[in-house]
Length: 383
Image (cartoon, rainbow, N blue to C red; front, side, top):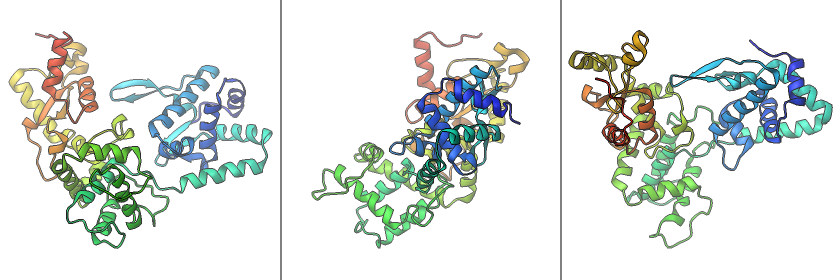
């Protein structure tokens, strides 16, 4: 249900001190088909050379906040990892299966504002630009680059050529990964030509290569190359797990239900998004989480965080009774698709410590986080 009338939106568009960047965000969403776009699509339009979905989402919230303050309308709240935050984005539209959907009243206000100052030809030109941007396939994800680099280092790789059976095989695997449900150009998405180009992008980074490689490699190509150039066994192990997931429809379905967070938006997990989300599916399994909590209550009589000692029941009373989260201890580079999670693999942690563990998930352990907090005298010392 819309919370703002068309006339209010017109007033806000004219007097809410919107910046050029704010108007560009609104234009991008307004000019998208049915005024609907995902965060990734908005990001591609706003900054095609380096799209960032999390920045696009933030921009929507920024404009919504200006509308909220100018119109003196409370948009309500939403819950983010247990924390209630102002739902400023709700001033712009709702979030559906295909992304942001601009409110009809805002669309009408945008149309009045734009056609009052710009010609239909100018608007059609903008729409053509957006359509061109939306027709591009998404940039390569870290998981995909890991698979490509693993093939590049394979001593039995063969020629870097689109007719190479191993390159064709990798193309097929990439098309099965649970990463990009939306592929604007399905025919070209990670085809053998694209895989060949990606492998060629590694050549300028390779000190053993004496020829001249492609010059279109991305920053992420270089980062991943440097991370694994001297650790190829770990690269191979991670790549093998990603391949297994690609052929496991049950695991892929579970992964597809895991929400994105700041680590996946920024593509900063060394082992990639797929194994990171597999980690989340394991630590959220209701059966073993219930068993872990039950065992802890039987043995300790309480559920306190193993890192900071915070006890939700002691702090919140009945509201916090039985509440605690689980973190999977197994390092991501040792995660195995076929392994079964045991109680010893899980640690009981509070929501804050869990987020901190995920921010350095490739290196930070529960014990080291606890020691760091103890050193700073920031542990909750409940008796």
